Length: 182
Image (cartoon, rainbow, N blue to C red; front, side, top):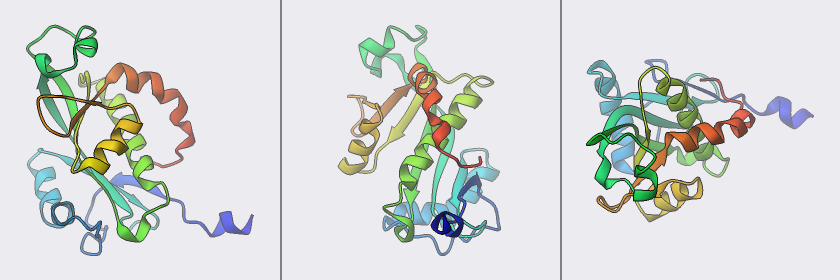
């Protein structure tokens, strides 16, 4: 029991000035630079919103970004497209970045961030339509990570993956195990 009391309670919350962006490093320069230099500007310009996983309200264990997006229906796999509205462009939500600090690796935080993002996307899709989730995986390891959760590769763009909102909704019943507070 003592170990549980000593473990920090992680919270997912919108990025703000109280978070230590300068200390964050995931080892991928463009993801580090985005959080340090661009995330605040994207928020002010309504281009993307960043959410951070923090153990103490300051340190950033990881982060993800969300923004609205659209894909051409013809670029969605046929077996998924047949269940979507027949519009030329399909509304989606983009997880633009998802990164875990090297100081916090190996603790399941990537999965926690992804599940939190999908849960939030599902909630928002009830007010602003989104037929699915898009990610542009940074490399082959990221493709493997997303495919493990059921993301489907879109053949039109290398490392672009799609997750239908119906699948998000179906899977959401098992996400109660992720005890984070966004």
